[in-house]
Image (cartoon, one colour):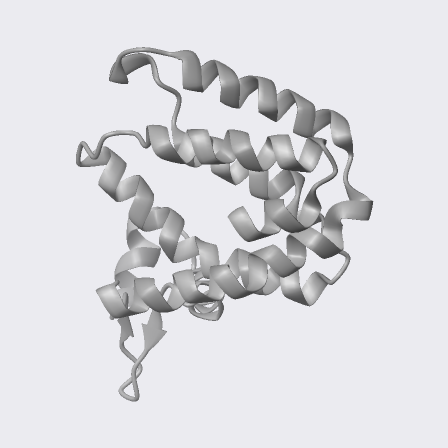
Length: 169
């Protein structure tokens, strides 16, 4: 029933809706019950802890293995952006720390040569990023501490201190 409703709402076929729902299921964003009902599972405190535990284990590993594959110029540019964000005053003009973090991960961690590792990290981040967007829309203040930490990580990377950067990440 939900597939038909979605198909009608977006004026597409049920096949397309099933394909999209299957892709979302692969990414862990929806689930299909034994009765073939689609549900968006709750994002619980435990599931968030579990996802951050995965981040803690996998992202430093990816960062260290990716270090020989980086294009340094985007990292330098990101450091300039992060510093500009750090210098801003007033919440309304502070850039989103989540965007800086996403770009940091893209320039460094996601350059790891192990595609499976990158895929797992990407899949793990999807629900966390969705939760961050929701919290931002609800008025959660932007995170100045995170921007400071991103600046420190970028400084370590640019100074060739990969292991300390991975530990701080």
